[in-house]
Image (cartoon, rainbow, N blue to C red):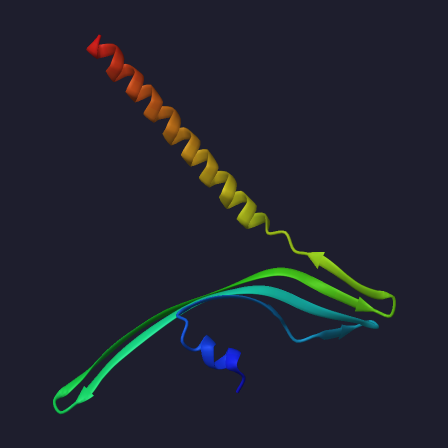
Amino acid sequence: MSSRERCAGHRPFRVETVRGEPYHVGGRKLIPVARVISFGKASATIGTDRIGGWGVGFTRVTPLAIIDETDEGEHRIPLASTTARALRSMFAGAVAITLFFTIIRWLVRRRRKN
């Protein structure tokens, strides 16, 4: 076990970019690349008449790219997530609408006081 593997067990929050197993397709070698975000915590109490424990964890895997290896070299093909792009746009719109109505409310209250 390397020192990195031993230290990784002591960190509850980890972000890593990993390469998957290669796929051989039509003379090409395709290697998936993903970002892995993980969190894990656990606790336990063991003893006479004391049994307890808890645990929590999550893992999120986000595909980033595919590496295309041929005889000519290596080419990285980024993967664009249209869903992520749409969610970011909806979030930005919600924030903009909230700010707009907050400003209107502030202006109306200010005008009533005068």
